[in-house]
Image (cartoon, rainbow, N blue to C red):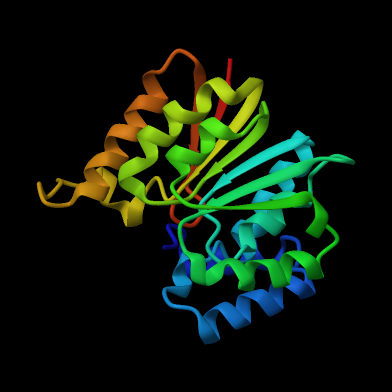
Length: 213
């Protein structure tokens, strides 16, 4: 979903950092072989994630929702020396696909894959995180927030993807549209929760930056 006029969006992409070669390959193979390739972060948002991670310089990153590993590799670009990225997904069929690209990158030994329900796995992770990226099943965003907020260091950052949901969050909600309803509630939670300060960026399908106070 692009909220900018096409010619402006094209200009923004053209004058931003180029997609690294390995991620170009991952992008192509995802579109060729994997179902629902629109779930991929994509080249421009990937460069945004990379830049934010480099600015934060995290030692420990948590990603909820790996898919084919594109966003994990982007976030890993900002890891400090000896840092770790822990990424969680429920799809067993994508584990080997992810690992192939992780190992082809400079960050293979720093990326740890976790297979299963994030709400079961997060309590078992023995780290205080500097950066968390939430990009999984939308109805659980509120549950993920409550699961990770006490594992985030003061000053740490939560990035939440797809928070504008093709603009549906600003339109009348169908009672049967659970994802939109829960995203609206999630966005309101981030606005009102006194533990974080939040801004929404209209990047692609909406990206929220929340900083723990």
